Amino acid sequence: MARVTLKDIAAEAGVSVMTVSNVVNGNSGRVSPATAELVERIVAARGYVPSGPARSLAARRTRLVGLLLPARADGTSLLGSAHDVSVAGALEAALRARDHHVMLRGVATAADVRDSVARWSLDGLVVMGFTDDEVRSLELPAVPTVLVDAAVPPGTRAAAVRADDADGGRLAGEHLLALGHRRVAFCGPTDVRSQVVDGRLDGLRAALADAGAPAPLVVVANTTYEAGLAAAPAVAAGGVTAVFASADVLAAGIERGLAAAGVRVPDDVAVVGFDDAEIARYVSPTLSTVAQDTAAKGRAAAELVLGLIDDEPGAGAVAGSPTRSRGVAADDGVVHIGVSFVARESTGTVRA
Image (spheres, rainbow, N blue to C red):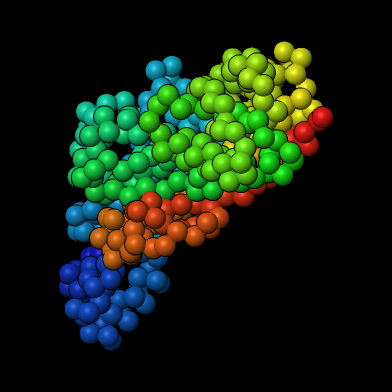
């Protein structure tokens, strides 16, 4: 069946193509109500679907949002974690509901970012999976941008969304303190600049300090299962009764590494993670963790980037909103997604 065109609709309605174009593109104020109603009736009856490229050309927008993630040298999936998959899925669905579409791109340099924006005429960017220093090195162009789990570089037209990391760290600390733990370790990539990791450690420190407990032992490790295995001996030798890992996958590696060293979880050392990823329910013992709503993070990123693209007042209003702990709120231009604590088998009371 031949595609119905604006010209076909115009001929049947007895009006100009421009008049039909105004109606289907939402500019009905330029057309009389009677004519607009006639055109809309014919459009519905003929099953006319506007051309995406034509609409983009008319609006001088492509309706494409680039989702930029770190390029992987081994050619494996850019969405390398359950967190990234969930955020990306919710982002795509929210953008699609607003007639925008996601272009997934792996980038490693500022040149890669510039090429992606120029080649595809991207209306906006969502950047995920980079540390704060890596984001700075990307030299983000003057395109509406939302950063997921990273700080906004000075002078950048960007917003950010992340979990309420400090609250999550505090929740982990409060849970362990309630079980009698006072000698606690924190394990994560503290050797890189990351407000996410810093927030989780700061929250733990604050909870321990408020209870008069010693500051946590810090064990540096990357956010991988293998890094958890390697970090386990340092945790075991640290004289602690509990460890809070910056991510579930890291915590799972620590659990396995402690078991290999003859350290029982939770009898000898309690283990807490962050994310409430699927692995937290599959490891043995099952993992106590700080849960974050990754789908809400993706939806928030979509709303932020669309607000910046449309230059809506709401995008600016986010920055001035008060912080609400354990809810969706904003502070200093960053939207925080609330967290909660999930207690499972990997934590228990301190043994005498």
